[in-house]
Image (cartoon, rainbow, N blue to C red; front, side):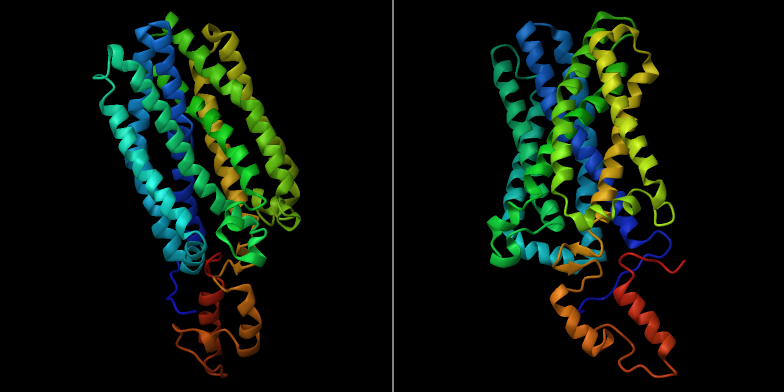
Length: 383
């Protein structure tokens, strides 16, 4: 307990992280991890068919994705580090000690990704003719770098749910390749591809003329892209759900809604399943009858996909409770191994930043306030 406590009343510490993190994940998954492969695919179609319309559309989609990822995406990425270090420095510090080399590697991959996306975007109109083929290869190389960045981070997110063999051997390899890692990666990868298509459809509407062949072809291509990834996404989601620790699975009803509404969790599950089916239905409609899809309907997959990923991230974070790192660190920053000592001596005895050491009748209210601040404010507010 050697770091001061940051507490954000009303909004809550967890909500601060959630707002920043969910916005970052929405942008990262839809416009980088999934978005860049989609753009590279559209550019490849232009090269293969000789149709310049595909090239123009791919550039329009890339321009939007590039601007959003390098502004809001970049700021929220930094914001996750800032907010996590502010709210729960013990958790982020513990993860850094375990995954130092993973994060170092991720940083190298991320820098490579930044260089590649700058090169990819700025050379689009220069690398033409014979150089176009090299530009397409650059796009797929960028897609691989974007995916690798996510793949490294997912190992850390999965570790927080189930450290696996790391509990006994404390090795980086065991920490990275924990029981939840590959299933979560198998789910997030196709999910990002579906989200990319959902995010691209509104851009298609802006970039093409109503009733044109270009629009119908573009809607068909993007919809088929989404449809191709729906089955892998469903299979990955099923695999992921199967490996979630049973104790965490019991928290899902509350994670979906609240403690008071936990009995309605089955309704929430139906709503989420309906949203996923809605995305698949619009994708199928666009894939087979693109001209008949109304413009407002093409906006629906993006709205539903962003709602689903937001819910998924909330549930993933919430089900770990009472842990920040399963079986190792509680949500309030207290290590599981230290709990017996604190239970014996009292929390205030070992707290660096507290105005109360010994509880008396005169200071018990202040002592309670200090205990709440130290032990509860990571998750709770007083209003």
